[in-house]
Image (tube, rainbow, N blue to C red; front, side, top):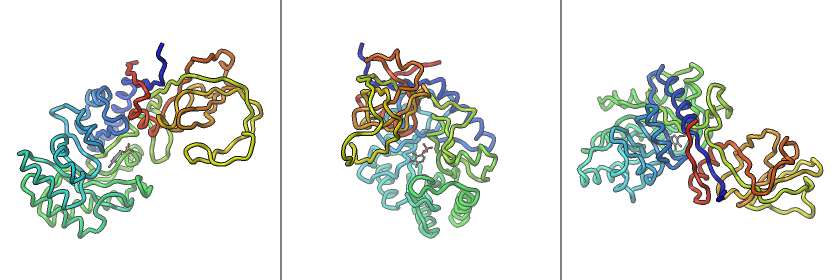
Length: 358
Ligand SMILES: *Cc1c(COP(=O)(O)O)cnc(C)c1O
């Protein structure tokens, strides 16, 4: 039987997680743009999100947005559009996050060509220093410019946090974001529908009853799928962490020392590995590697230790596993997965995907 490495996605578990986040944010009248880039907007997962009540989807890649077919759903391009691709942007998304007048102009010209109305969220940089207008004058000036365009509606403003600078959302910086929206509304005498207050890390504030008045939307990926609090980097008790399971096949089992023998340089992929001396250990080598996943995977058998990997191999210490003597070459070992591994796994053509319900 073909036993290539496989990701098994439990759609019911995702449904439950999404429902919980929707319920929590509903209390504060905050809606969700479900971010789908981790799984390349996989149609089964998108369908699950939609059934749970999601009506706004966001992805950084146009190729992924093309998979989302619901007529009554908004499709946000959450990476600033590239001017060279405005045609597909207007064709396959309904809204973009934006920070440059040049891009707004190009989008508007394209909208006129395609005879379409389009929406934009103007990005404000409130400290994380990735995308967005940093100066108030720049923000106001860009807002005024977008507002003057014939086919583009300024739907609101947004910000991004904890991406480049690692700056966490707080009552202070999100209140500042809301004040920027008030300023634009007042100066331009318009109403903005959306204040998009960040990603999964912003969800922490709402979960902890520290909601910021005036935030109307969050763009969430990670927490929806993995039940993880991204601020504290830990599992949320009421949510499910193992909706994505990796299964990989054992291609070697041997007893070996814990510390490599010989003078040591760099390992594969420019890493310098650390080793703990546990003596002679029983180790399994698996046929999957960093080309397909990363090291943020966790054996379901908690007595196993993931020792490391290279581009095509994983090494797992199975000495302490109750099953260590029953494993055979050709068997599989299972792990639950976090963000980087799932993201790579979904773009890897070497990994099969299977979708199950409970
Ligand atoms: C990826 C991304 C998100 C979602 O981040 P999560 O950590 O998965 O919640 C939100 N906004 C933007 C602009 C992004 O690029």
